[in-house]
Image 1 (cartoon, rainbow, N blue to C red):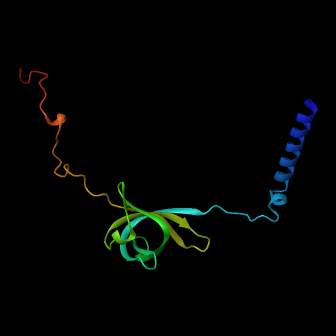
Image 2: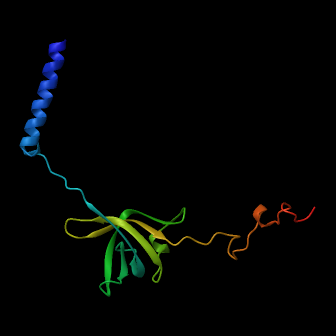
Image 3: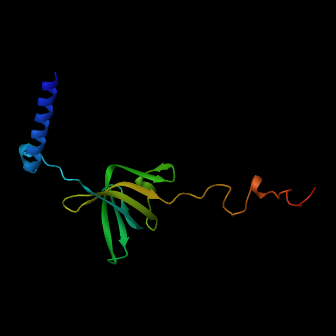
Amino acid sequence: MNGRVLSTASLLVLLTGAFTLNGGQAWAKGHAVHHAAKSFRVAGTVQSVDADQNRITLASKKKHAEVVYTVAPNATVKSGRERKSLADVTPGMRVRLRGILGADKTRTVQEITLPAAPRRGKSNGALSGPSARPSRRYGQGS
């Protein structure tokens, strides 16, 4: 049993060494080599939305031009915790996009984040609830 474990370990070391010395090419022959896709994140102002073509155009501050992004069919659109659709995106909105940059430099959007709606009851900035009541400690009241 001990000899069998040793020979299995030796075989594993030899195969690992051959793979490493060959730069992984011995294994990669006949197998597609997948390169990791680069992801991108960008924020900007929407110039136009074409829901039929699944495209969104943002204004580019750096280049003083417009950048067109392709929206993936399964892309998520959200505002806070609420799910939205591409039809809810309108020109002039500030949005954040997250997606993948393809090998051919196409920008495919996987997630669009819209500004969250203001929370109800908290719009005027006044405190409410227990923290808004004066304390009876430190000589305030009896």
